[in-house]
Image (cartoon, rainbow, N blue to C red; front, side, top):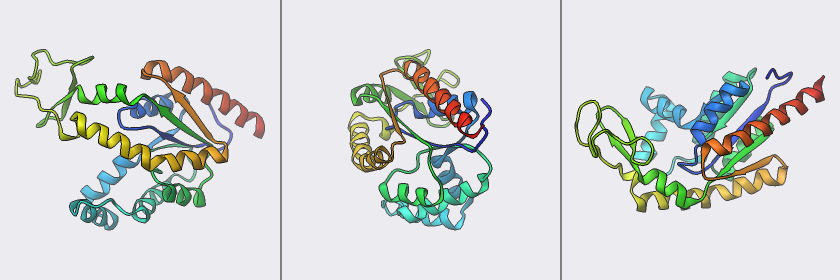
Length: 223
């Protein structure tokens, strides 16, 4: 769908909620440029930029990266996309980050994916990884041909520390605590739209229909 003005959106959801899949579909279906804050952070750390080195220092010390550093990094990337419509994934995660974003850009829509924690826990704890290649298997819907072995090399698969049941629940609770103020911030602005479900393929049609309707209103308003 061709937009007659720039459209800025944010997608939120806990780890394992299908955020990456939904983001890719939005980008393909509606033409918004998908901006993953995680990709930007990793690229800057790998390239050893000034902000990347500051972030790495915080991470190496076991500390959270300060909001002002994250905000500087993401907002700097967004200045390169002044003439693009975008979908921001992974930022903002705190109220301070949301306020920093609002100072520079007016967000049209915040898509919030709400998937029950027990479903996410099942998804994430079913993941097994072949570390040398990065190949990921899921015992429920993408199992290896031989249980516990990589399809290509036959080497053992492992469950990453991030995917153990205890770690998954700790991450989910931390996400909930950190982002609830952000959701309330956007709810108060009238731009938050929550989509609930247990399967990405069933949530997606509702997200797509909502955005098509939203875009039609935008186009009508500037026609």
